[in-house]
Image (cartoon, rainbow, N blue to C red; front, side):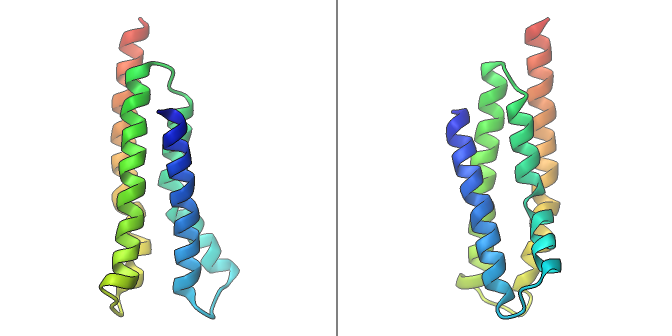
Length: 120
């Protein structure tokens, strides 16, 4: 399960970078690429938390959270850029980490508490 979560999350990170560069058009800059790194921080934080989990239930909780958030995150970006294009579509790159980071943090805390109780 861990391996599937890593693969899907890395694919989502690549998709976010690719779609972000596509959304920049001809104005690709180092600042824009740095901002895209901020967008993928929730994914990287979730993968770091998953790396530190060793209890099977904790791994499943974080794995499923990362898989679902990766799919939902890429879907929201594709929806904003292609399905419902709008002048405000680029706001998804600001809103996405704001919504994903608390979910990853809550799942990480829950998985950590479960692992901590099971290890005692």
